Length: 212
Ligand code: PCA
Image (cartoon, rainbow, N blue to C red; front, side, top):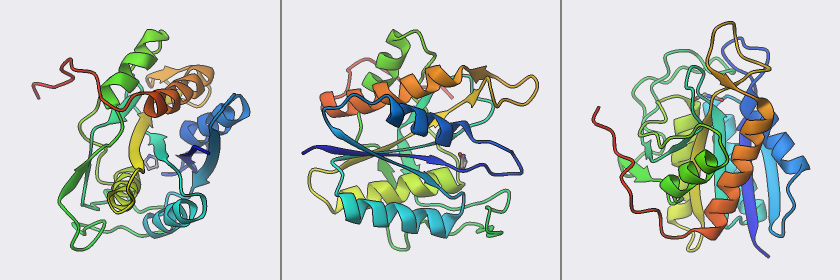
């Protein structure tokens, strides 16, 4: 049985809602399979989020892990290409922790590339009429940390692949004037990310590079 672990996050930074957790819940409601989809909403706490992710991976032994979070201000759904071994928090997490220039995993490699087909995922989402683009930085906060930990786990588990997708604000949750997409489109985009991650093992050949 093939299993996918799809996670979102709780609200943070004083916000009332987080569209990533909401989109993951919505995607789970309408997931038609045939693979098993396991979903969770992680706390926006460096240590607790990583611990919960590791526990979910140990419990369900997923073939694919896709963690998701909010990138407020981005207009696109953005599959992330690289996780870096760095926790540098500009704001405290929801537990009050504010690590500065600490590694995600002491002794781990400087970075991991996503083992998901990020270009094919962006293309599949775009193909459904939902704005998407490959991103080359997941930041240095809890999202990057969870992405790095997922990639680190995948590196020691043959057959397991892991990646991260940042989502914009949903129209339903966006602060005044912020870029957003309808919540239903974000949920659909995450389903397409899961489907593409399962179906595509060799990423698209076209460039998704950036000049800056
Ligand atoms: N976004 C934050 C953390 C939780 C979330 O949804 C981030 O990008 O690190």
